[in-house]
Length: 203
Image (cartoon, rainbow, N blue to C red):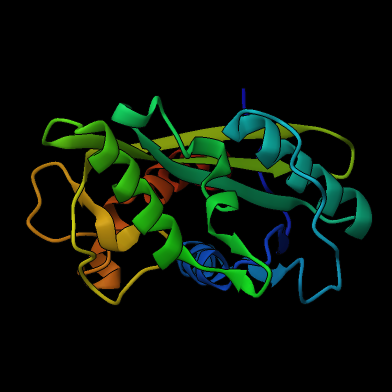
């Protein structure tokens, strides 16, 4: 039996503006006030686990303990089959530069590796999102969502963030980077995980 969320304020344990925007929009119908870890001056804890769930737990529990409020974290990434699931939990790390995250560089790296391996087409991949809702008493709930598709090139679209411009979901003609944000929100890996979160803790 999952624990119900019965508060009116939730910390989003992220400094990623794109994620915070998406999560705020998805939770808006439930009358929950959302505040980000960055707004509260929290630092980002080291993500030392090798799974999406493990890293999501680190972030959510840290924010819940620091603020005394329930906290929601998201750990997500793209897993490319021909790269043995990479970049996976290291998706953001592949974009790190001394000047900040450069996802054009990261997307180019993925495509160059696929080309070097002469990976067969379609170059299948999945976008994965794991949500952790944690309470200050140490309890948590985990929800997962996954969308299957393929990596395409060149990059397409200016919407979304991260690897969205090179990810074409199965059965679609537009990448996540080309889709209207409302359409992407309705079908994304994060939306699927959120549907499970809402059903388990909010509905």
